[in-house]
Length: 119
Image (cartoon, rainbow, N blue to C red):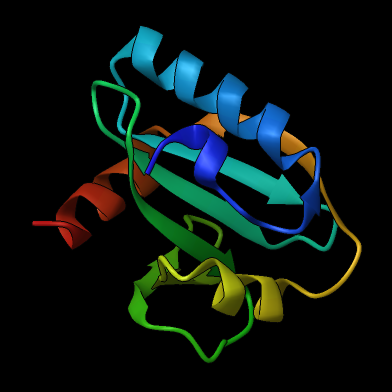
């Protein structure tokens, strides 16, 4: 899917997706993280030609989505990561009136975890 096809009901998502995919493409990275105002995260897996291969949801709470795995940060915090390409299902778990507050290219331990999950 192309960046403009991300149909999440999140204020600022289009700008965050465009910025994130451009930055990931420039840096040669595969994953972009978008943090929402409720603490949940959207992770986009990006191809070199800026196609979105997968959409993932990251949460501290279990969700009714397809699990990819549980990522444990160095401080012991557990994050559940789900792979879900159906925007409607993602919109249901994100809730109403969400807003994108931060976007970054994912690196380090989380990037390694995600790469391993897609092997």
